[in-house]
Image (cartoon, rainbow, N blue to C red; front, side):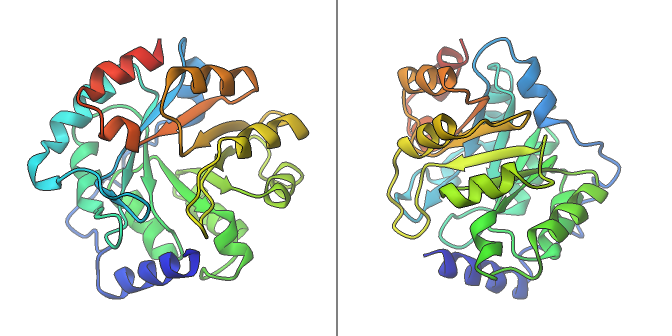
Length: 260
């Protein structure tokens, strides 16, 4: 599955999906997701706006959602950031969605994508993203156009935050022992090969290794406040939640409840 996701990104790049010439947020100074998380008085929730996923299929009909209105209300509900899916294939995302949201909110925005090329990082800056996601497994399996260190340096020179995503024990240990220190680390509870979700992924890694001064964000599979409380007690600093919010009949109320 991971190889398929990477190939889809290259396909989207070649077909011009990351052409962001219509936008110019180059002068936008990125909001620090780390600082927003540290300043949060409740549970730091990053709400993900997504319409489809490989594991769930269609989650929301994008033609029936007022995206800007939804993003605005979510940003006022106490969240520390928004994640906007921009990968067009299998996720029904778009860089245009993120650019529209940028005009409406003043919280950090994560460009959620399968990033394999600096072209996507250029687009992230131009559409007003504050943070990008780099999936360590992609780089370890040579599925991207360069090393993760190169991509991190490139993004940071553009003033972007970087969320490094891991899933396996070895990946997490390598991040903790590397120059990624004091960066954002996302622990994905979803296996990107099988798409299975298990919150024990986050739990076991935090129980086995000292996270140091890194900010750890748990991703995927979080659906209730008890899970948030338990993960928080183990040292999770932030929670990236998408599907369970997007599928809720009242996403704003749900988010407010979880933040509290």
